[in-house]
Length: 88
Image (cartoon, rainbow, N blue to C red; front, side, top):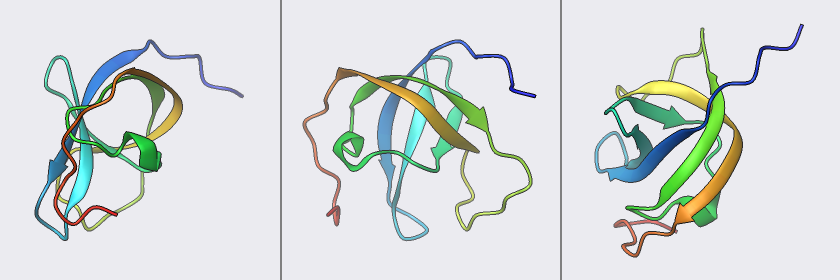
């Protein structure tokens, strides 16, 4: 059975320089999401996106930050300008 579609969330891409460094998403109300599948072109600090997806349950990560989240739809609102340190 397919889950009902969720509302779009507006998020900002951030870079966290611990646990080896990683990208996170912060919603307008401050919710922290740890994306499993953020495309490389959106891995730019301060990028603003509209996303849909689902929380991932029962999977552990080494990152002690945010809720693990699998993106299903992404729309670019504004591309950021600042590359994170050590990004490829």
